[in-house]
Image (cartoon, rainbow, N blue to C red; front, side, top):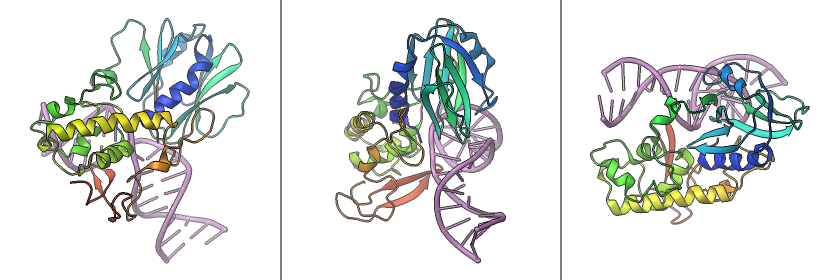
Amino acid sequence: MPELPEVEVSRQGIEPGLVGQTIESICIRTAKLRWDVPTDILLTHGHVIRSVTRRAKYLFINTDVGSVILHLGMTGFLRVFAQTTPLKKHDHLDINLSNGQCLRFNDARRFGACLWQAKDADPHPLLLKLGPEPLTDDFSLTHLFELSRGRTCTVKQFIMDNKQVVGVGNIYANEALFLAGIAPKRAAGKISKARYALLSRYIKQVLAAAIKQGGTTLKDFSQVDGNPGYFSLQLNVYGRTGAECLRCQTDLKSQMIGQRNTFWCPSCQT
DNA sequence: ATTGACTCCTGATGGC
DNA sequence: TGCCATCAGGAGTCAA
């Protein structure tokens, strides 16, 4: 289940195989993922891939005429290999390169997306409301505190809201709240500046650490080379319902908060 | 404006 | 062994 670290690891994985290569053709095998796949992406035929970038959990394959935007959703992953590689179930899209290689997008649950951003056009509507990138200075230690005043939703829902900060998915929200010692059900508007500074620092730390280790592998994710990520080995709370807290041996709790499974230590997190 | 419920989809899982 | 029913989950959309 790709979160920001997994998307960034995917970006780093596909970038060397794509940049400088010419797009020979694009094969849309599945016309509708989360939304209809825009045929505008075919405009990239014959154009060179200048860069592969990321904004939130969106990946951009950038050419001189525009960008193919990919979102991995829940179960999406990307591979770069020979165009002759046999198809597997749920292989939805190929970007064929003139060197015989291709970028292939596979997504079992089709929560992923392929979008089009024309060069010099207004930004895609989906990108307009996104908050700052958590790993940049745009996401300051006081950012969350300032936005949270008066908010009654839980702190967990607040940090997972893309309008506040992008890329904090369920796994890392649980982990960052544990490290900061904040109970996930606490109201966002009633948490002190000092605690938000701590939480912000841990959000940055946990995301950066996960990227460095190649992302978290649970059920679905693998790196572009097919190897798993290794971060799951050091999850403190996610998925550990009933197990003992690694810090204080208290039994961890879990509960659905805002349709998402939430894990915490009732002793360490207050 | 904010919040919560609903929705898309398929594979994994568990009960019988 | 097989067949349901249930669930996970990113994030947009809609209703309240």
